[in-house]
Amino acid sequence: MQPFRLRKDARDWFKALREDDSFKIDFDVFYFCFIAGIAKKQKLPVTNEYTAELVPNFPGRYADRGKLLVALFLARELDHLGVTMHEKKEVHSSIAKLVDPTAPHNLSDEGVKHFNQYAHGGYNVLLEWFANDRPRSLETFLRTFKQKLDTALLPTL
Image: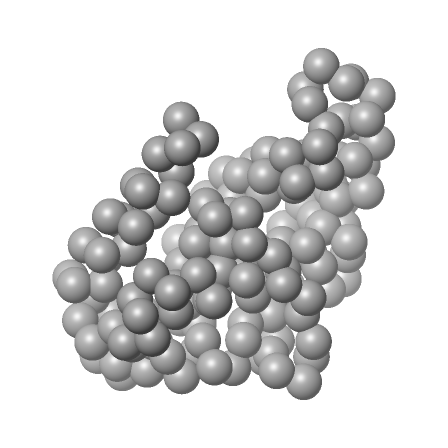
């Protein structure tokens, strides 16, 4: 079973929020990268050399939200693959490759690979949104993140 992986430079970029305890676990960093990647449809290949292994499941407060994150991922990935909900056979086949109901995170190894790719690409989105200026306070980061997220999702609404 593959674990979630976080880019090492993303961990460093969020250094101030990690040091002031705004982000209590590294999965907090992963989460914001993932959401940005999903919103902007940005995926990048993940290499072990530039990433750190996180956890094999959704930790802490994310445990209850894991299924929601998987659902967001599946919707975006089906869109990426060009599969519509009217194509039942293709939907089933695509989801079957990405989901493993026996895994703690409900994702197959292939699913985790693509899930990580959205987080990996999402870090680049955050660099763009924040003009490479790393976050210094949680309040400022969240305000800007929400504004950029709303703008990114507006065309798809």
